[in-house]
Image 1: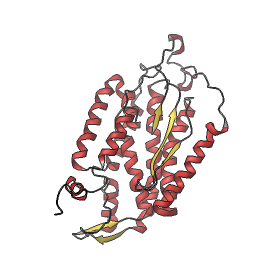
Image 2 (image 1 turned 90 degrees about the vertical axis):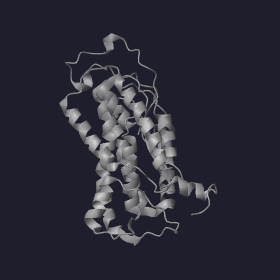
Image 3 (image 1 turned 180 degrees about the vertical axis):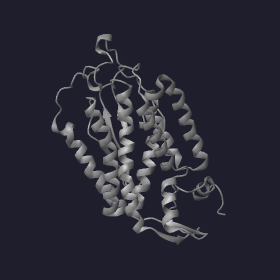
Image 4 (image 1 turned 60 degrees about the horizontal axis):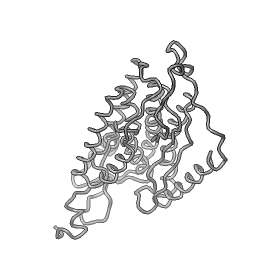
Length: 312
């Protein structure tokens, strides 16, 4: 996930250099900020990484820490290294510990981008680099999780937490554990939970909304027309609340992050066919990672839990 915090560009025309120059020479680097202290440069990032690792450990032990933190770190470093390549000023990743409340002890991570995107190519590459890197690391974690998977009976009266299946996880379990008897479900271990959350966060970030990763990609592809896609995408999230109450939190977070996308310094530069192919790859990753109902549960069960409806 990326978060931009710079004012709209008012760069004069002479700073938008001719498009005949190499990619990294088509703009003047954004004026560098004064060198930050060690605390601001990497100290607080390291502290949040340690705190988040501890929070994840309390939620699922060392395997969950190893699997999930590796996926999240790969995702954010994909963004960060792409920013370094294009000389876009960005922070190291900020991890978000969320003990006791979050299923996995964290709400993910983000980097803060402090200078404008030079052009649509840079915006596209920075936006798509994180999801592709995180997904690439998620695949071996998912493969390792197969050894932990078992098949268990569904107990409606138990306190077990049932998770919705991303398409990729569903395909893997069908291939490895099929046939799964009626009335049974797949029980995943710590690495399975890490890969499930990694896929969920990948799909969430690829939603074509505001300044999410998918919002960056869609703006790079469509320019100002991406605002229409962003509004439609957010209303789709609101509609998903009807199918699963677990979407309430994510719809709120997406709304907060879904601000209008700022322009790049050169919105006129074309992307080219290669990036259109990469965009299709991003769409495939979104489809196989998406979870319509992250936590299986109905509004009826929620209302019964809080006493609005009598137990069925």
